[in-house]
Image 1 (cartoon, rainbow, N blue to C red):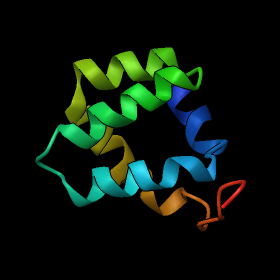
Image 2 (tube, rainbow, N blue to C red; image 1 turned 180 degrees about the horizontal axis):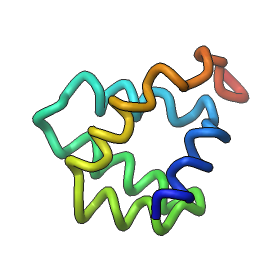
Image 3 (tube, rainbow, N blue to C red; image 1 turned 180 degrees about the vertical axis):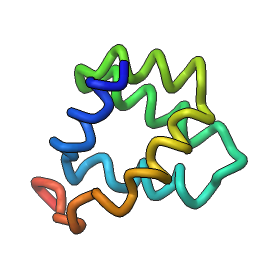
Image 4 (cartoon, rainbow, N blue to C red; image 1 turned 90 degrees about the vertical axis):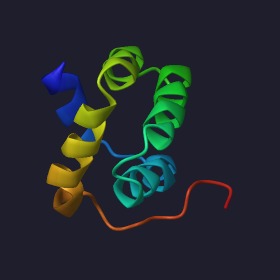
Length: 79
C-alpha cells in the first residue's frame, strides 16, 4: 500500500540505492523491478514486493517521482 511505500522511502537504506538506480536507468525494463521485488521480500517488505511484481510500472513511477527525496548515497554496512 501507499503508506508502506512512503515509509520505505523515508527509511531508505543504502542497500536499496543500486536497485532504485537500476530501475530509474531502465524505465522500459521490468527486470530491475522484479529483482528489487525479490530483495524487498527477503528483507521484510512483502507487501511492497507483491505490488511491484504485479505492477512493475508503479515501481518505476514511484521511484521517478520520489527520486529527489532520496537521501544522499551512503555506503552500505561492510562496504
